[in-house]
Length: 309
View 1: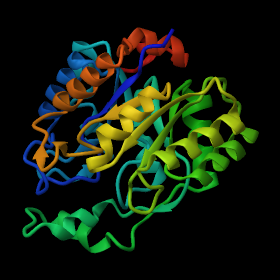
View 2: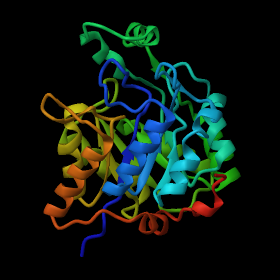
View 3: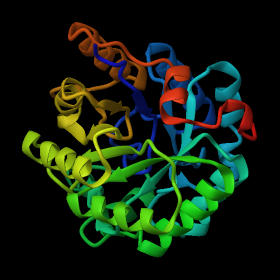
């Protein structure tokens, strides 16, 4: 018998910009609306970044997070998962400020430093609305996303051991699985691991089935077959790779952080549209989206009552 599938929705992220889509949620009110709709459509986990309400630029300011997180918590039972990846130019201290204040059930944890060229799509746009977007375009080919062994250990110490936070371990390439193995030699972390395979980001592993199978087999050799794992894939690869993941026994992540589209050349009008589509695909293959409480039990989360919201 198959298990239910954990559906994560990454609502806004820090990579896509307002010039790329008019449907990208930027203000606290928009993030609340999009999050609630995604949860109602079947997402059990909400992966959340914050945006400057004035111009849509990414921010790590805990005060901005607090303009939307309490309302999301009040209006739905979905698991709140706060980024520790932040956005370009943010220090680790800035990236940890909101999670340490809020003590969520889950946060992301990126598993290695990499050339992260997610902004190269901006080079194709004829016009950019904001100055900060032009800055993103200029750094696209030289941006390095820093996550050293010390950074990883710091996150695990301060959030994992300090707050009982569980992690969405974000893995952008095979070597980062070995980084996780090294990190687990030092820090106590009870099973199960929840590993998010990230495919199709320029600078990381490609969005191909062979690459996914290699990641999965490597993870199972390193950590055993009882891991929980999921897939997100950038852009046009999103739905196909998530479908592969579900059929292989994994979980899925969609959302406008990962792709702005719902089909070839067709912008998604909301996060809920993507969640609805992947949930339909799951059900067509005799799979059911997991409920938030099922996810809490499977991932051994501390519970919404322990979150400071």
